[in-house]
Structure formats: structure tokens, C-alpha cells
Length: 140
Image 1 (cartoon, one colour):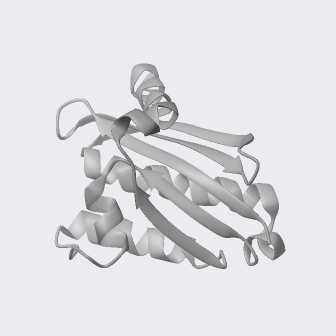
Image 2: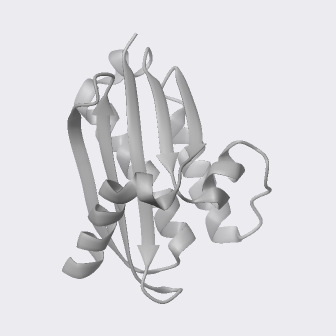
């Protein structure tokens, strides 16, 4: 059974402000197999946090194909306590835009066998943070 770890991060300079999403996807041996870095326009940091995971799920599914995805175990590590707790059902999603993002993320996670969310300190998410910041720097 294939296992993958996604480190995801999103940010906005100003809230809302110029936003970016970044994610690094690793295989079970810890090898980096793909990354995402996308400028999102003017958004909130929470929108960007969700978008980072959504983009990572899309990238991983495209990379490994649907058959392999349906057998895959995915662990998402991020420093956004809000997104982690909302995805675990510990916090309610109240904001209308985040409800849409939440629904998109739930749909995206459905193609994998299992998906778990883990909160990590910012220091353990520096690769994804760098990708999100590169996206904001590019503004393209």
C-alpha cells in the first residue's frame, strides 16, 4: 500500500492580501516526488492554507493515477491548527468561503484510501512555507 506525506502551507501578506500556497509531497521513503507553489491573488491566509492541501491532492492524484490513489494512505502535515482541527471535525467551519474550501478538500481526500491530518510546529514545515512564500513573491 503506497504511503505519502504532504507538507502544506499557505499564507497571505495582509489578511486578506497577496496570497500563496505551497506543498511538498514525499513518498514513504521520504523522497520528494512533487511540489506545488501557486500565487492565489488576494485571499486570506486560511483560504491559502486549504488551497495548499487541495493543490497537493490534485498533484498527487495526477502523479500516481486513480488506481494507485485509491490504495494510498496520505498524511497531511501543516502548521495551520485551524485547518487540521476543522478537517478532524474538532472545530466547526463557519465562514462561507472556508465552507467551500472545506467541501473541496473533503471531495479531494475521497480519492485516497485514508487521509489523516497532523498539526506540526512551523519549524517542521519550512519547505512548504518556502514554497508558499515563493508563490507570493512571484505574484503570477
